[in-house]
Amino acid sequence: MSTCTTASRDLDEPLAGTAATARTWLLLEQPGPWGVKALTSSHLDPTLGRALEAAAQDTGVRIALIRRPGRHADCGAPSERHVYAAHTTPGNVWLHSAMTNDPEQLLNLDFTALGMGDPHTFDAALGGRPHTGDPLALVCTNGKRDRCCALLGRPLAAELAASAVEGAWEVTHLGGHRFSPTLLVLPYGYAYGRAEAHAVKEILQGVQEGRVVTEGCRGRSTWERPAQAAELAVRTAAGEHTADALSVVRTDGTAPRWEVTVAHTDGRLWRVIVARGASLPPRQESCGSALGSPARMDVVAVRELPRVTLPVPC
Image (cartoon, rainbow, N blue to C red; front, side):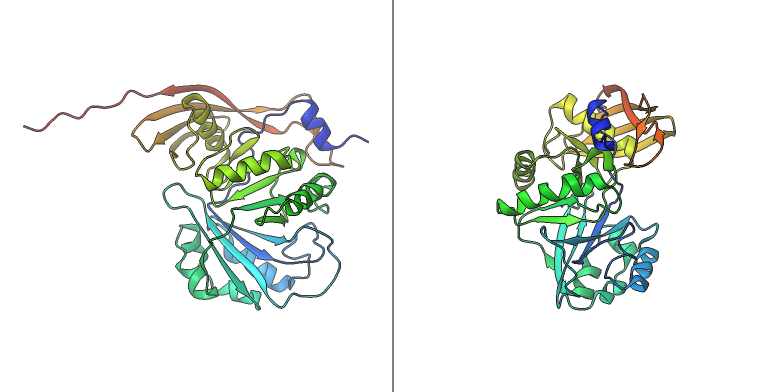
């Protein structure tokens, strides 16, 4: 039986510019089964889940549930849970971790401050501190959202855990089921599609060295989708792999065409033209959905701008 992932792969649908958007990720450990909307359809108190959704709205914070790879029997609530917060904006990238036995403590967070890149509220509310372990490799495995996430994501998460990738977690939702297995790597916030274990290990090694692997990359979650595609295009054109070397400083225009300005820390600038197209022929965006034409971000042009030499004052 054909799946949305098979169709996307066979039609060579491009990955760039398809990552979920979030400046800050907030992750709460929640073992056991997950439903379609996991914050309100898992063993987490749904009242708390709704309150967290409301608190994070329009703040730049995206909340997801995580669990260790493996079997997910209904074993009740854990006595302690891991909690992570990661900010992904270049120049202020951080990953903090904490443990809590009361997930309602997350309601004490200042979500606006978190979204702007201030970790102090996380540390004060939860006793958090900078994470000193491996980067996080989050694999979407929520089969209730799409069967491809379970069929392809869970084996990848299990293989990573079996090969001693300590930062491997299953996560509830990263978007783009048709690109399964999907992966998010923190702290930098780059997302990947059609991921394989050997490639994930290379990606994580790069993160530890401050590098970005662009093969299979969907984009950096910090940016909206046109900017994700533009940043990756500049990386390819400039041969730049340092994670925080590039920033998106401006996006002009509206759909279906944008002009994105990308800046390098060394002062170089690029103007990138991105156009929204339709993926043809029609295909399923998710298993069981009607045929459609998913939006794609096509980079039309990449142009390095001339450097401006300022006059020397007399």
